[in-house]
Image 1 (tube, rainbow, N blue to C red):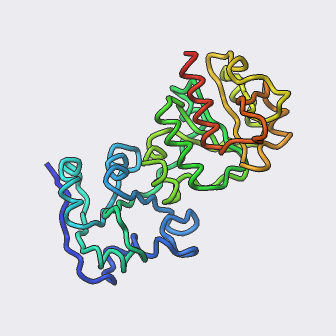
Image 2: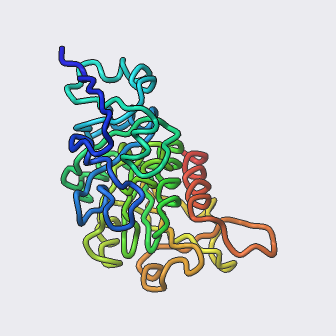
Length: 269
């Protein structure tokens, strides 16, 4: 059975760890889609989820004790584990990495909308959500509360950016996602698949979410904090729904709103 080969790295300039270099660089990061387009997993738990996903790593970089934590997961995995001190790692990646291990994978072809929706009854559809931490939190909430997929409309951040992967605790690598090819016209393809399309809005005239979600398959539209969903997107939905809030509050964090909407689906199922 193949095992991860441990290779000691003493020189931060070693070309074998070039794919982990400059992770905090605005224009040289290896996870930029327009450059190497790699997927970087950070920390033991996230690396474990990468190993169990459709994003198989081709290399790992970490300190010795993190290899020991991952030894069982790496049994049968034929990839190099570049072992370095914390100081050498910091020089390679550009900052001190508390989590002590990174894994790098290449991006596979993106799933089609049909492929992402195969087993989904509850779907999050995002418009204008361009904060990577919110993207990551939405995927973590989706995994924990049974949402089957995340779809991206217009003007959304890259879900495979390192920070999004980290904040999602690796669930962005496991929860299916896809980009709708046309926006908002692409929502019609969801309706054709039997999805009730619900726009989440703080509008007090909107229906209560607890009574609005009546379909067996539901697509929940969420917009960016501040502007929310565009009127064009809301016009393409079946119903506008709100999460009841106390007077004097205008909205919730988009990831929090997603979690409450996912929970409402779990509660009534």
